[in-house]
Image (cartoon, rainbow, N blue to C red; front, top):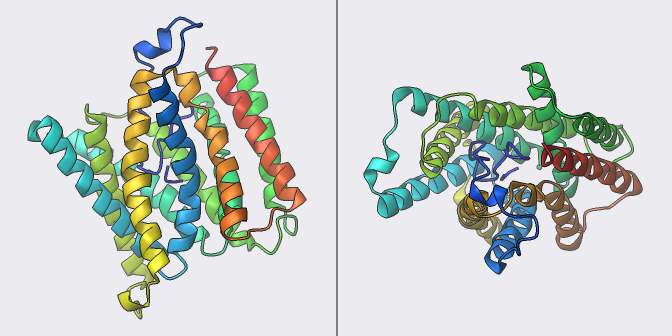
Length: 327
């Protein structure tokens, strides 16, 4: 979900990074400057990989308990990322203060346990494409949080929020989205709220200076949180690794390597190499990719209410992103 905190200020991603949306030098580039092929390549990775993580989660939970699978994914990805940071930048890059560690752990729990963990749980009953469309409304929650804390988003952002919520209403009305349990839909909405709070908070509390180290701590903390919830739910009872299908193992490996490491690295590089307005376009491309993959791979139904509601949600996100990039 995720997987995947920045639109333009939040999500990264499935990697669960903080809102590291500092525009950098690329944001001040001349308007007519040609965008290099490397940027388009990295953007394609973020578009496709993050959009495909919803499909990956859906396949994982076919034979794996939701929170146990999420715990394994994030702890492994976090430890790998921490090892890479220490190898490339030295162990000192991982040093943080207690306040920074506490902040990273808090954001990690909000993003990866509250946000992504609930998404994994919801996808045991909710199609991956519909889940992605419901999650696309995250930028609207971020705008409302900013307003609650005294900021003044532009009129276009408010109109985008209205569109996003209208689309959300269409997607969640009982009976319109097919045979989908309303509890699963509400779980996704709760996940978007947690993700938004975590994303919003990450830029307002003392986080580690190194964004890769911060992401590693967040993933480990979020993974431990998912493990505790899994044990509390009793997911370990009756679970046998021998019962996990090969495709679920493959999907989990894909989420660790591509969703939580490669796509995150591409995203972090883009934040320093491309205009933020261009990077933020992932927010309305990912849901489209997720819906198409869900329909093609899992034969998920694309009903007219999902198509209409999803289009309205994506239009709202487009309006929010276009308004923010002019500010």
